[in-house]
Length: 282
Image (cartoon, rainbow, N blue to C red):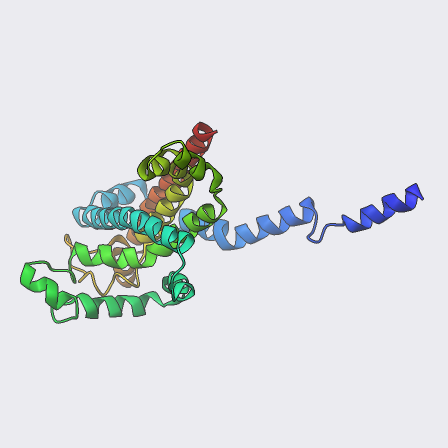
């Protein structure tokens, strides 16, 4: 009987997915085909990219200006998305209102909408004769064909990253601690800053990093609204496309390599901050 019971338990605990060996092999194969091989091709391609050529492209004033535009607008958009995403996630989790499911579904619209369509729509809305641009123009605010327009476009495509990383944490948060703090006389701000906010720092950092990394490499939604003016509103991905159209493969590779290093350093720094925040929160 004991042997039959053990055999029955073994059948009940049989793994649905493959074991570690097969699962790890499939994971490595998938990552190699999708991520590692393309990155290796970027690093090892034979385009005549010497160190002198790389340094010449990296220090070119037009390239530096494109990096400044891309990094500045992506950082501003990610910072704004972090605040707005927290507010949106809070409202969707803590309150019930008519049309809540519809608003929740609209958060993922930038994922499904082609970026070129989003860029054309944003340009039409924020141009001088657009719905919103016509209201901003008398105030001396130029949205389209300016860094402000690029920031707005990056905010549009980056907001889902913040909301979807913060929302599950808020849903799983226990309300007992908040109620206990309220019974002890803690105000709303103190309860939020000392109890809720520390648990939200890791997902907020994750959402910021994802929105920032997406903004650095975004092309479709920005190329129309930016105006593509060199030294002013030209983004780094557009400069890569320009160099490819000119058959300057070495220059395009150099610009892409710098963007890759910036994104990798950003994600590495965010992971270190997340590890530190989790360690201090314990």
